[in-house]
Length: 204
Image (tube, rainbow, N blue to C red; front, side):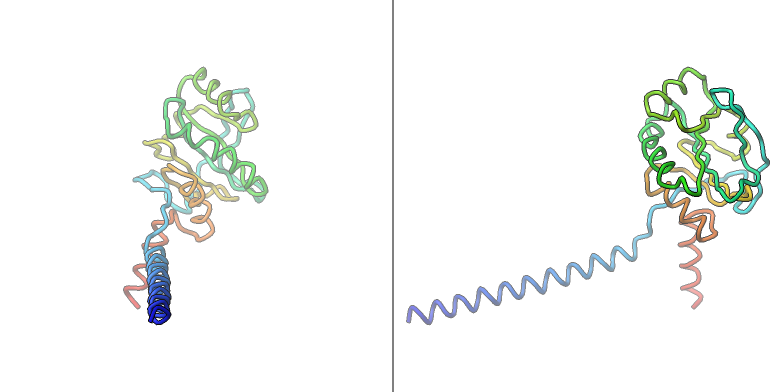
């Protein structure tokens, strides 16, 4: 009798384990489906003055060391990222290490310029505090106006021909990397790519 009860108990235990395994598998599948449905977070585009594919007006600006930095124009196979930031912007400061890391990781095809329009002492402190010595920093109100920058941190990616490849507000590493992804896909932002894909699915 005792052995029969033990056998029954063992069978029930194994049944519970199997049921639990099936529930975990079902939950994992649902998580996967949900992940596919959630759109990746990309840089948010605003009502900017420039459009995707538009050729930015080339300009040469002096960085804080007095060295002339060419903005836009043909760049012999290299793209250029303009990262607009301010020493008074907490989000900008939290992103600077990510921008510095991207400059190293994407050095084979990308040049990064940090841009702003405030007082020089604040930016000098920002360069010192965040190790931006190897990165050009230009201060120009005209540059921000040219790209319709109204909120920070903001980034504009120019392709090898000096055309606007992607742009938008960047609040995370994912936002910054989405600009590179958008350039590859030929859209202004990841949101635009997803919007086009959704519209295509609805038409199909």
